[in-house]
Image (tube, rainbow, N blue to C red; front, side):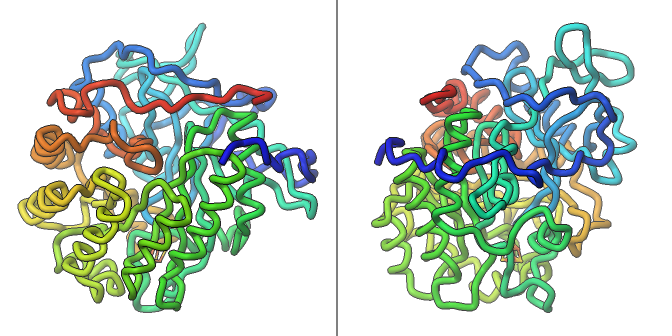
Amino acid sequence: MTGSTAPAARGSRPGSQATPPAPAGALSGAAGPAQPSPPRAAGPAQLPPERLAHLIAELQGHGLRVEVEMERRRGGAGPADAGMLWIDGHPATVPTSARYARSSPYVLRAEDDGWAIYRDGERLAPAEPMRRPRFYDLATDDGIPYWKIALLHLDSLASTVIQTCAYWGNSDQCAFCGIGVTLANGRTIAKKTPRMLAEVAVAARDLDGAVDVTLTTGSTATPDKGALYVAACGQAVREASGLPVEVQFEPPGDLAVIDRVREMGIDSVGIHVESFDPRVLARVAPAKARTGIEGYFRAWERAVAAFGRGRVSTYVILGMGEDPDVTVEGCRRAIDMGVYPFIVPLRPTAGSLMAQVDPPSPGYMESVYRKVAPYLAAHGLGGQGASAGCARCQACSAIRLLESAEGGDGGGPRTFLPLAGPGR
Ligand code: SF4
């Protein structure tokens, strides 16, 4: 599995439709020519981890006003809607397009030599918005722009391989999800093939320094819930690019499917319970509630046996009315098993059923982070050990910075895998 079979050059061409629309709210004329995101080094942070964690929790709760051009994600599976930037060298996704972000006290402002985040005129931290990846200018032989196939989330390539879901548009739709939004507004295609994704992954690696790939899928009305198709995509990506791959899917009916996913060379899996509070799960994700919290634990047990501790993760979304004690207890039980609970705030996504809900307060987020982070550190299960996926990226949560403050295995810098420069 090397990058030597790279199909990037095959059929890659500048696409006439290859420029995504400028994000709303971006200042016209501020962008200049498209530039790749600069490769990142794991340099020492300037702010202490606790202060940076607090700032990121604040930004993820209040949103960020932007006075510069930056890459953003709209819609998508699971919790979505974010601008992407590096804050004091740490990756972060923060709401920039949401209604509440427009009144945020925080603003991203250009300086003479860079950018910084300000509040009430006070400069809080240096920051650097993600710039438009170079691979977005390419298209497949049949004219599909690469950016409709996969997006770069800072240094992680991400795609929803099947952009439809058996639950979307009916009574089973997950209330926080925006998977159908992106498809409806023409920003993606309904189904990406393994070959397409492999082609884009190699380009993202070579042109923009992508270091891992995260593939998710809408659930299918098949017993495997789409796990085998997303894994086949991941296998193709891995074989073409050599990048570590995480795939994400619902617990399949037959747990032996998880073993098959591992046999296909996938590095890690995300199996997302979303909430440990059964009352909340029943209200916001009825189909997942039918699997039940115990159904997730059974799937995780099988996944940890196949992939190993720390290579199985679950999203835990806060701000949906959950009982925090039940939530913390569920996280600790998952950690005992070797599952990384990736705790994130609700991102009320335009077009989702929770579009009008307010995100949780930063103080609430921090209170839960502070109960779970020490437990992660004590069990040696920090995001530091993850090779791919959301647990490695960490941009959607501030928890890893608090793991760092606890001195667990997250105590070192974030896992920055070897970067590939142009021409690799
Ligand atoms: S299972 Fe729920 S979160 Fe996942 S794609 Fe379907 S509706 Fe969205």
